Image 1 (cartoon, rainbow, N blue to C red):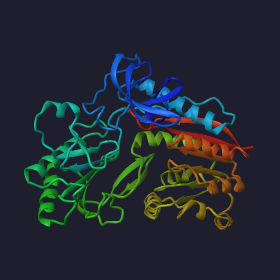
Image 2 (cartoon, rainbow, N blue to C red; image 1 turned 90 degrees about the horizontal axis):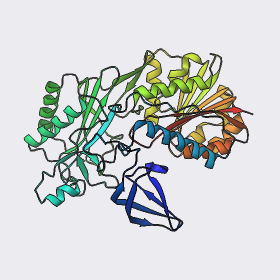
Image 3 (tube, rainbow, N blue to C red; image 1 turned 120 degrees about the vertical axis):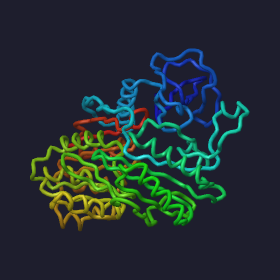
Image 4 (cartoon, helix red, strand yellow; image 1 turned 135 degrees about the horizontal axis):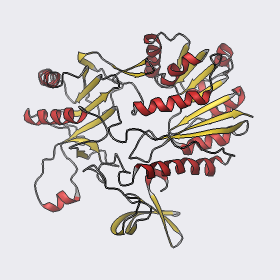
Length: 450
């Protein structure tokens, strides 16, 4: 197993990357892509199946791009995730490493997500078996994008990612739209009505549903909203968006709350986090709690430290560690996320946080450090691209005692660690699995000043 959950094979000194197989499978391959230094291939015939294989539990496995590792057992998934972290840190980071802490597995390996986004389409994806059957099929779909295709949606019968009543709500919305002749959207021709459905569940039991449509049809929307409100009284936040744009993003559009409050709450250790329709929150809330607990533990806070929380998002980590710190300064690129962070401090009576919105390399300035002081601890949780080199240089200049680096991409984390190795040693490495049945892995590294 190598990057992106693919397997590696070699033939005539060429490296071949293969999706949809397990280490130990004996297969015939068809080359699908040829590059100078590598090939990509797909399996066409299995001669022998790997001992690592298990039976996938979802009927959509192999077509849907969501859970690409259902064919290997969970312990095996964890082994390869830990190996992925180790390989990246050793090969890219090229720094001395301590013994790794064992990867922290997720207690739930199904129904662990708190948010799913489904798309409507009038040209559903047909599987090879459906095409070969010669039958006519209903081409309206409500489900997930086929990997690499913006215009094809797989109609989903049952998804194992989000707990009840997620599947029931999706199926009911689909049924209602069909019965009331509400046309499913055509992304290519830009015609239709039903566009998108977002379902957010929370560990407080609160439930948000957002329906996105292409045109403003008040009567149809009123009837649909009322139907959902009556059918699913457990919905605490029922909202809709009219979106006539070429894509489904709605961060710049008004979201109208039909019933309940315009937000829901997640909770950790009695701290409530308000989640609005446009808010970011970790999609595996239970495992996010484990991730943040381990982050706080590695930060080793005594209550006297000034902490900078870089890429703070909605201030989840900043507010989570605030009780153990003297002061926390959170910085984030997205202004709406910073507004959420401030609200999360207010509703929890947390008074020792300050938040700034803007480009990290511009906000993390000499002026900011002069105003607030040199941090003893920096927590950084950047996007997949890692930290900008200017930010790394600023950290080397400011030289906090400890940097706790949380990453969803061990490759860019390893690159940044190599840059930081001028003044820092890696003293702890803690991989964390946030997304069972996928190849994705989070990793926490503690960097201690030399």
